[in-house]
Image 1 (cartoon, protein in one colour):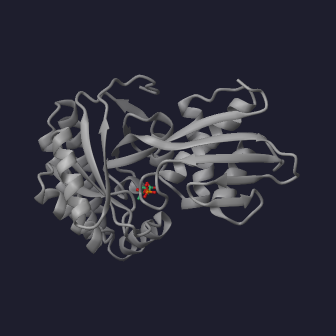
Image 2: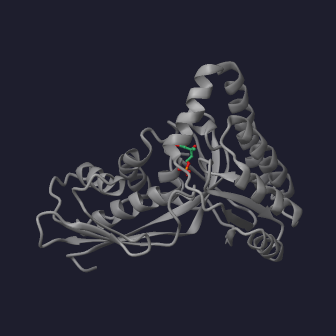
Length: 317
Ligand code: PMV
Protein backbone atom coordinates (compact mmCIF):
# COMPACT_ATOMS: atom_id res chain seq x y z
CA UNK A 1 0.00 0.00 0.00
CA UNK A 2 1.21 3.49 -0.83
CA UNK A 3 0.99 5.33 2.47
CA UNK A 4 0.00 8.62 0.87
CA UNK A 5 -2.97 7.21 -0.98
CA UNK A 6 -5.98 5.16 -0.12
CA UNK A 7 -8.12 3.14 -2.48
CA UNK A 8 -11.64 1.89 -1.92
CA UNK A 9 -14.54 0.43 -3.81
CA UNK A 10 -18.30 0.38 -3.38
CA UNK A 11 -20.70 -1.66 -5.47
CA UNK A 12 -23.90 -0.72 -7.26
CA UNK A 13 -27.07 -2.63 -6.50
CA UNK A 14 -30.37 -3.85 -7.83
CA UNK A 15 -33.34 -4.01 -5.47
CA UNK A 16 -35.17 -7.23 -6.39
CA UNK A 17 -38.13 -6.56 -4.10
CA UNK A 18 -39.09 -4.13 -1.37
CA UNK A 19 -38.08 -0.58 -2.36
CA UNK A 20 -40.17 2.14 -0.69
CA UNK A 21 -41.90 -0.28 1.72
CA UNK A 22 -38.40 -0.74 3.23
CA UNK A 23 -38.59 2.91 4.35
CA UNK A 24 -41.66 1.89 6.43
CA UNK A 25 -39.94 -0.97 8.23
CA UNK A 26 -40.70 -3.81 5.83
CA UNK A 27 -37.85 -6.03 4.61
CA UNK A 28 -36.23 -5.81 1.18
CA UNK A 29 -34.08 -8.06 -1.01
CA UNK A 30 -31.26 -6.71 -3.14
CA UNK A 31 -28.21 -7.93 -4.99
CA UNK A 32 -24.87 -6.20 -5.41
CA UNK A 33 -23.77 -5.45 -8.97
CA UNK A 34 -20.28 -6.23 -10.20
CA UNK A 35 -20.15 -2.59 -11.35
CA UNK A 36 -19.52 0.20 -8.90
CA UNK A 37 -17.40 3.17 -7.89
CA UNK A 38 -13.66 3.20 -7.13
CA UNK A 39 -12.21 6.05 -5.10
CA UNK A 40 -8.65 7.19 -4.63
CA UNK A 41 -8.00 9.65 -1.80
CA UNK A 42 -4.69 11.44 -1.40
CA UNK A 43 -3.48 14.49 0.55
CA UNK A 44 -3.84 17.73 -1.38
CA UNK A 45 -1.27 20.51 -1.72
CA UNK A 46 -4.22 22.91 -1.52
CA UNK A 47 -6.14 23.86 1.58
CA UNK A 48 -9.33 22.70 -0.12
CA UNK A 49 -8.97 19.73 -2.45
CA UNK A 50 -11.28 18.52 -5.20
CA UNK A 51 -13.50 15.65 -6.20
CA UNK A 52 -12.85 14.61 -9.77
CA UNK A 53 -14.82 12.13 -11.79
CA UNK A 54 -14.26 11.99 -15.53
CA UNK A 55 -17.14 9.54 -16.06
CA UNK A 56 -19.64 11.99 -14.57
CA UNK A 57 -17.78 15.07 -15.91
CA UNK A 58 -17.43 16.31 -12.37
CA UNK A 59 -14.64 18.47 -10.98
CA UNK A 60 -15.71 20.31 -7.86
CA UNK A 61 -13.98 21.72 -4.79
CA UNK A 62 -14.60 19.81 -1.58
CA UNK A 63 -16.26 22.86 -0.02
CA UNK A 64 -18.85 23.17 -2.82
CA UNK A 65 -22.60 22.97 -2.19
CA UNK A 66 -22.86 19.94 -4.50
CA UNK A 67 -24.37 16.85 -2.88
CA UNK A 68 -21.32 14.70 -3.66
CA UNK A 69 -19.02 17.22 -1.97
CA UNK A 70 -21.32 17.42 1.02
CA UNK A 71 -21.37 13.61 1.22
CA UNK A 72 -17.56 13.43 1.19
CA UNK A 73 -17.35 16.13 3.90
CA UNK A 74 -19.79 14.19 6.07
CA UNK A 75 -17.78 10.99 5.60
CA UNK A 76 -14.50 12.72 6.47
CA UNK A 77 -16.06 14.27 9.59
CA UNK A 78 -17.53 10.92 10.61
CA UNK A 79 -14.03 9.47 10.33
CA UNK A 80 -12.59 12.17 12.58
CA UNK A 81 -11.12 14.41 9.85
CA UNK A 82 -11.98 18.10 10.02
CA UNK A 83 -9.77 19.41 7.16
CA UNK A 84 -10.57 19.46 3.44
CA UNK A 85 -7.02 19.15 2.08
CA UNK A 86 -7.78 15.95 0.20
CA UNK A 87 -7.92 15.01 -3.47
CA UNK A 88 -10.67 12.54 -4.25
CA UNK A 89 -10.61 10.80 -7.63
CA UNK A 90 -13.52 8.63 -8.66
CA UNK A 91 -13.96 6.03 -11.38
CA UNK A 92 -17.57 5.15 -11.94
CA UNK A 93 -19.16 2.29 -13.87
CA UNK A 94 -22.81 3.05 -13.12
CA UNK A 95 -25.02 5.95 -14.17
CA UNK A 96 -26.15 8.32 -11.43
CA UNK A 97 -29.80 9.01 -10.54
CA UNK A 98 -30.73 5.67 -12.09
CA UNK A 99 -31.78 3.66 -9.02
CA UNK A 100 -28.60 1.57 -9.18
CA UNK A 101 -27.11 2.91 -5.96
CA UNK A 102 -24.33 5.09 -7.39
CA UNK A 103 -24.38 7.56 -4.51
CA UNK A 104 -24.10 4.79 -1.91
CA UNK A 105 -21.31 3.14 -3.92
CA UNK A 106 -19.50 6.50 -3.97
CA UNK A 107 -19.88 6.87 -0.20
CA UNK A 108 -18.64 3.33 0.52
CA UNK A 109 -15.70 3.77 -1.87
CA UNK A 110 -14.63 7.05 -0.25
CA UNK A 111 -15.04 5.67 3.29
CA UNK A 112 -12.88 2.64 2.45
CA UNK A 113 -10.28 4.74 0.63
CA UNK A 114 -9.95 7.17 3.52
CA UNK A 115 -9.80 4.24 5.94
CA UNK A 116 -6.97 2.69 3.93
CA UNK A 117 -5.14 6.01 3.82
CA UNK A 118 -5.28 6.05 7.60
CA UNK A 119 -3.99 2.47 7.69
CA UNK A 120 -7.32 1.02 8.73
CA UNK A 121 -9.24 -1.46 6.63
CA UNK A 122 -12.93 -0.96 7.37
CA UNK A 123 -15.13 -4.01 7.83
CA UNK A 124 -18.21 -4.18 5.58
CA UNK A 125 -20.33 -3.15 8.56
CA UNK A 126 -18.13 -0.15 9.33
CA UNK A 127 -18.02 0.94 5.67
CA UNK A 128 -21.81 0.72 5.48
CA UNK A 129 -22.21 2.74 8.67
CA UNK A 130 -19.83 5.52 7.65
CA UNK A 131 -21.34 5.61 4.14
CA UNK A 132 -24.82 6.07 5.63
CA UNK A 133 -23.64 9.43 6.95
CA UNK A 134 -22.69 10.47 3.41
CA UNK A 135 -25.87 9.07 1.89
CA UNK A 136 -27.86 11.47 4.02
CA UNK A 137 -26.68 14.39 1.92
CA UNK A 138 -28.23 12.73 -1.14
CA UNK A 139 -31.41 11.28 0.34
CA UNK A 140 -32.23 12.93 3.66
CA UNK A 141 -33.32 9.87 5.63
CA UNK A 142 -32.42 6.81 3.57
CA UNK A 143 -33.52 3.41 4.85
CA UNK A 144 -29.92 2.23 4.69
CA UNK A 145 -30.41 -0.48 2.06
CA UNK A 146 -28.21 1.15 -0.59
CA UNK A 147 -25.13 1.73 1.57
CA UNK A 148 -25.53 -1.75 3.08
CA UNK A 149 -25.57 -3.52 -0.30
CA UNK A 150 -22.82 -1.22 -1.61
CA UNK A 151 -20.59 -2.40 1.24
CA UNK A 152 -21.53 -6.09 1.51
CA UNK A 153 -22.40 -7.06 -2.06
CA UNK A 154 -23.99 -10.46 -2.73
CA UNK A 155 -27.62 -11.18 -1.94
CA UNK A 156 -28.77 -9.04 0.95
CA UNK A 157 -31.87 -9.23 3.13
CA UNK A 158 -32.32 -5.80 4.67
CA UNK A 159 -34.64 -4.47 7.29
CA UNK A 160 -34.22 -1.05 8.91
CA UNK A 161 -32.79 -1.28 12.40
CA UNK A 162 -31.71 -4.91 12.04
CA UNK A 163 -28.27 -6.36 11.33
CA UNK A 164 -27.63 -6.95 7.64
CA UNK A 165 -28.06 -10.53 6.47
CA UNK A 166 -26.13 -11.83 3.52
CA UNK A 167 -28.02 -14.77 2.12
CA UNK A 168 -26.85 -17.75 0.15
CA UNK A 169 -27.67 -17.39 -3.55
CA UNK A 170 -28.02 -20.98 -4.72
CA UNK A 171 -28.26 -20.25 -8.45
CA UNK A 172 -26.94 -17.52 -10.73
CA UNK A 173 -29.34 -14.68 -11.51
CA UNK A 174 -29.51 -13.50 -15.10
CA UNK A 175 -30.66 -9.90 -15.12
CA UNK A 176 -31.34 -7.50 -17.96
CA UNK A 177 -31.62 -3.84 -17.06
CA UNK A 178 -33.35 -1.17 -19.10
CA UNK A 179 -32.44 2.46 -18.49
CA UNK A 180 -35.17 5.05 -19.06
CA UNK A 181 -32.67 7.91 -19.33
CA UNK A 182 -34.92 9.89 -16.99
CA UNK A 183 -33.48 10.93 -13.66
CA UNK A 184 -34.76 9.18 -10.56
CA UNK A 185 -34.55 11.52 -7.58
CA UNK A 186 -34.77 9.31 -4.50
CA UNK A 187 -35.73 12.01 -1.99
CA UNK A 188 -38.39 13.33 -4.37
CA UNK A 189 -39.90 9.86 -4.92
CA UNK A 190 -39.72 8.99 -1.22
CA UNK A 191 -41.41 12.34 -0.46
CA UNK A 192 -44.15 11.63 -3.00
CA UNK A 193 -44.93 8.29 -1.34
CA UNK A 194 -44.82 9.89 2.11
CA UNK A 195 -47.36 12.53 1.16
CA UNK A 196 -49.66 9.89 -0.33
CA UNK A 197 -49.22 7.74 2.81
CA UNK A 198 -50.13 10.72 4.99
CA UNK A 199 -53.34 11.19 3.00
CA UNK A 200 -54.40 7.53 3.21
CA UNK A 201 -52.40 5.60 5.77
CA UNK A 202 -54.63 2.53 5.86
CA UNK A 203 -54.36 1.95 2.11
CA UNK A 204 -50.62 2.54 1.97
CA UNK A 205 -49.88 0.41 5.03
CA UNK A 206 -51.79 -2.37 3.25
CA UNK A 207 -49.66 -1.93 0.12
CA UNK A 208 -46.46 -1.93 2.22
CA UNK A 209 -47.61 -5.11 3.98
CA UNK A 210 -48.17 -6.79 0.64
CA UNK A 211 -44.78 -5.66 -0.63
CA UNK A 212 -43.20 -6.99 2.58
CA UNK A 213 -44.93 -10.32 2.04
CA UNK A 214 -43.56 -10.48 -1.53
CA UNK A 215 -40.08 -10.05 -0.08
CA UNK A 216 -40.58 -12.97 2.31
CA UNK A 217 -41.92 -15.14 -0.51
CA UNK A 218 -39.05 -13.99 -2.72
CA UNK A 219 -36.52 -15.05 -0.12
CA UNK A 220 -38.11 -18.50 0.09
CA UNK A 221 -38.22 -18.78 -3.72
CA UNK A 222 -34.54 -17.86 -3.95
CA UNK A 223 -33.59 -20.32 -1.21
CA UNK A 224 -35.35 -23.04 -3.22
CA UNK A 225 -33.70 -21.87 -6.45
CA UNK A 226 -37.19 -21.24 -7.86
CA UNK A 227 -36.42 -18.39 -10.24
CA UNK A 228 -39.77 -18.61 -12.01
CA UNK A 229 -41.59 -17.97 -8.75
CA UNK A 230 -39.30 -15.01 -8.05
CA UNK A 231 -40.12 -13.61 -11.50
CA UNK A 232 -43.85 -13.70 -10.75
CA UNK A 233 -43.27 -11.94 -7.44
CA UNK A 234 -41.32 -9.23 -9.24
CA UNK A 235 -44.22 -8.76 -11.68
CA UNK A 236 -46.56 -8.30 -8.75
CA UNK A 237 -44.03 -5.97 -7.10
CA UNK A 238 -44.09 -3.71 -10.15
CA UNK A 239 -47.87 -3.54 -10.04
CA UNK A 240 -47.81 -2.55 -6.37
CA UNK A 241 -45.08 0.06 -6.96
CA UNK A 242 -47.32 1.47 -9.68
CA UNK A 243 -50.08 1.80 -7.10
CA UNK A 244 -47.67 3.66 -4.81
CA UNK A 245 -47.32 6.12 -7.69
CA UNK A 246 -43.62 5.62 -8.46
CA UNK A 247 -43.77 3.99 -11.89
CA UNK A 248 -44.18 5.88 -15.16
CA UNK A 249 -44.73 5.30 -18.88
CA UNK A 250 -41.07 4.58 -19.73
CA UNK A 251 -40.65 2.16 -16.82
CA UNK A 252 -43.91 0.41 -17.75
CA UNK A 253 -42.75 0.18 -21.34
CA UNK A 254 -39.45 -1.46 -20.35
CA UNK A 255 -41.30 -3.90 -18.12
CA UNK A 256 -43.77 -4.82 -20.91
CA UNK A 257 -41.03 -5.20 -23.53
CA UNK A 258 -39.02 -7.39 -21.15
CA UNK A 259 -41.96 -9.67 -20.43
CA UNK A 260 -42.88 -9.86 -24.13
CA UNK A 261 -39.34 -10.98 -24.95
CA UNK A 262 -39.39 -13.83 -22.46
CA UNK A 263 -38.37 -12.42 -19.07
CA UNK A 264 -39.62 -14.43 -16.09
CA UNK A 265 -40.60 -11.17 -14.41
CA UNK A 266 -39.78 -7.48 -14.50
CA UNK A 267 -40.18 -4.42 -12.33
CA UNK A 268 -38.84 -0.95 -11.76
CA UNK A 269 -35.90 -0.96 -9.38
CA UNK A 270 -34.90 1.73 -6.90
CA UNK A 271 -36.88 4.86 -6.23
CA UNK A 272 -38.63 4.97 -9.62
CA UNK A 273 -40.12 7.96 -11.40
CA UNK A 274 -37.30 7.36 -13.91
CA UNK A 275 -34.15 5.35 -13.53
CA UNK A 276 -34.19 1.67 -14.43
CA UNK A 277 -36.33 -1.43 -14.63
CA UNK A 278 -34.88 -4.88 -14.09
CA UNK A 279 -35.91 -8.12 -15.77
CA UNK A 280 -35.20 -11.54 -14.33
CA UNK A 281 -34.37 -14.05 -17.04
CA UNK A 282 -34.08 -17.83 -17.11
CA UNK A 283 -30.62 -17.99 -18.70
CA UNK A 284 -27.75 -15.98 -20.12
CA UNK A 285 -29.29 -16.40 -23.56
CA UNK A 286 -32.67 -15.24 -22.23
CA UNK A 287 -31.07 -12.13 -20.75
CA UNK A 288 -29.36 -11.42 -24.09
CA UNK A 289 -32.74 -11.63 -25.88
CA UNK A 290 -34.37 -9.25 -23.40
CA UNK A 291 -31.43 -6.84 -23.63
CA UNK A 292 -31.76 -6.83 -27.42
CA UNK A 293 -35.53 -6.25 -27.23
CA UNK A 294 -35.03 -3.31 -24.87
CA UNK A 295 -32.44 -1.78 -27.17
CA UNK A 296 -34.78 -2.27 -30.12
CA UNK A 297 -37.46 -0.43 -28.15
CA UNK A 298 -35.02 2.50 -27.92
CA UNK A 299 -33.62 2.09 -24.41
CA UNK A 300 -30.08 1.80 -23.19
CA UNK A 301 -29.86 -1.71 -21.76
CA UNK A 302 -27.32 -4.08 -20.27
CA UNK A 303 -27.28 -7.50 -18.71
CA UNK A 304 -25.49 -8.89 -15.70
CA UNK A 305 -24.99 -12.35 -14.32
CA UNK A 306 -25.10 -12.35 -10.53
CA UNK A 307 -22.84 -15.15 -9.35
CA UNK A 308 -24.26 -17.76 -7.02
CA UNK A 309 -22.50 -17.73 -3.74
CA UNK A 310 -22.38 -18.10 -0.06
CA UNK A 311 -23.22 -15.94 2.82
CA UNK A 312 -19.56 -15.19 3.53
CA UNK A 313 -19.01 -11.98 5.44
CA UNK A 314 -22.28 -12.60 7.24
CA UNK A 315 -22.72 -10.42 10.26
CA UNK A 316 -25.11 -10.36 13.14
CA UNK A 317 -26.77 -13.72 12.60
O1 PMV B 1 -31.80 5.50 -4.27
P1 PMV B 1 -32.51 4.38 -4.96
O2 PMV B 1 -33.16 4.76 -6.22
O3 PMV B 1 -31.65 3.17 -5.07
O4 PMV B 1 -33.72 3.96 -4.00
C1 PMV B 1 -33.51 3.47 -2.72
C2 PMV B 1 -34.67 2.69 -2.23
C3 PMV B 1 -35.82 3.44 -1.58
O5 PMV B 1 -36.54 2.45 -0.86
C4 PMV B 1 -36.73 4.06 -2.60
C5 PMV B 1 -35.35 4.54 -0.62
C6 PMV B 1 -34.68 4.03 0.64
O6 PMV B 1 -34.08 4.86 1.35
O7 PMV B 1 -34.77 2.82 0.95
